[in-house]
Amino acid sequence: MKATHFFLGLCIVMLGYTAVWAVPTHITVRVKTKDAKFLGTLMGGASVRLTDAQTGELLAQGLTVGGTGNTKQIMQTPIARGMSLSDESAAKFTATIDIEVPRLIEVRARGPLANQQAANTVSATQWVVPGKHITAGDAWMLELPGFAVDVIAPSAAATLKGGAQDVTITANVVMM
Image (tube, rainbow, N blue to C red; front, side, top):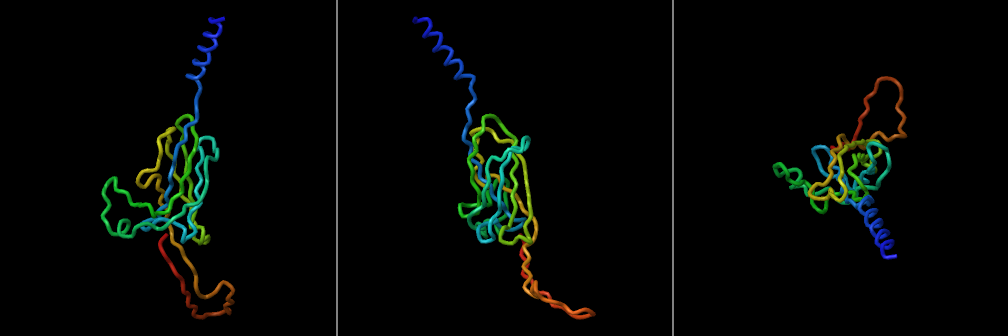
């Protein structure tokens, strides 16, 4: 009887060593506009999707939330290698994914969501190791190029008469 219990106990221990358990892994994604600031709540943020690059499995999705970051730190301070451009106020999306083995993850961001006519998409891939969080400093930062253009005049409903005429166009144009 003792031998049977010992054998069953040994089998359970052996199974425990061969089982693969998912490990919660934290990932923070920041979307910085090209040569400008972070894409945050004021511009509607960016939609972010984390997927397995090899299988297409959706691992997490959400929006960047927060401010545009510290202007002096981003726009005026010379950038040194390893220097973080973000601070706690800078917009971000944070997710926790459960993975058992290293996976090639694709992050895809689209924004600004408040200016759909100017929205652009950017993506990147990298290997993510279970339990090796991507949260320090700028974390996983994507750079989104483009311009946000708001046409002020003429209005979208304006009708222009045929023939040669001068038309004044007024727009608010900001770098993404």
